Image (cartoon, rainbow, N blue to C red; front, side, top):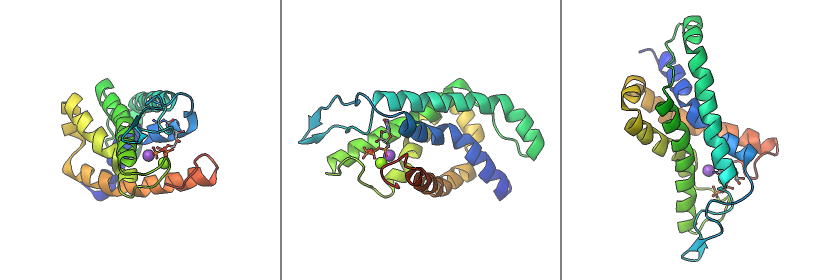
Length: 181
Ligand code: CTP
Ligand code: K
Ligand code: MG
């Protein structure tokens, strides 16, 4: 598989996992998931993980997967690269996995004494990959094995931090996010 083809498929396949974080930033607010509870003197998750942001993030990921599935054949024909349609379970694994990974990262941040918004290099950029890929492999195994070749996985691991840093700096400059990470 050519490099460009692998990059395009990796980006396309990960879009339903990329968009939830950004949708959560736009929609976030309201009741925190942890309800204010603390553990060992720190918040369980913190005010940055809300029910509304999480629900909006998952909904955005599912909606995007549905749109991409509708246009997959036309896009494939137009660009000459076979981009995949998403099964409902694949979409759910990617979108919900991304949000779960982000929530788990906040859990780890609070356990390591980091306040809300503190940076945790590495984890901040890959938290959603670390949960969305295994979850998708678990609940949409056939789809995952077909789309996520080793090459695609390698591209995802390299490309995701670059995209994450770029979109967060843009969101910060636009005043949508409090920190550029
Ligand atoms: N957000 C949300 N619910 C989520 C994820 C994000 O409401 N599940 C919103 C919150 O308003 C959050 C913002 O998106 O402040 C930015 O997300 P993120 O950077 O993940 O949260 P932080 O505020 O930096 O908190 P943390 O230190 O826990 O990551
Ligand atoms: K985060
Ligand atoms: Mg943050």
